Length: 125
Ligand SMILES: [Zn+2]
Image (cartoon, rainbow, N blue to C red; front, side, top):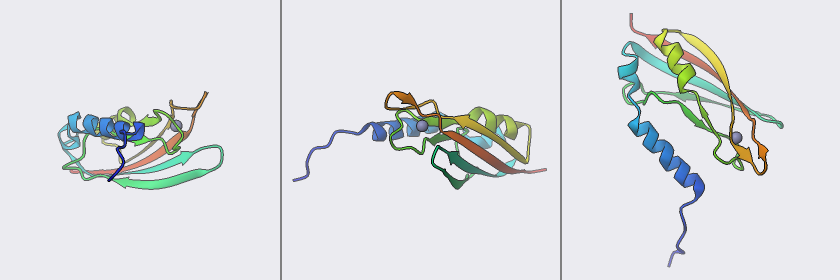
């Protein structure tokens, strides 16, 4: 028999993020001319950095850009890039960048991991 496991805090945060994404307006209704979007995300901490690219399916993507903190020990670490990204998309910018500092905490101290993003977007004429 499988041991009964309590829902972990990480799973709860994941579920909560899902819910917010479901509740958010669709990207395609917010920026109807947008045809392509990708974000190159780079996270930096004291020991190094990691980089990955997120591509969005415009028809289905919510107008919400949340990236979980890359540090597993970080509590409530999350980067909300929505304001910066939506501002750039509404202005029809083809490339844009920004950064966000993690407001989560690791034990008694603040996480302060910095996430940089480089966005590339295309629009219909
Ligand atoms: Zn963090």
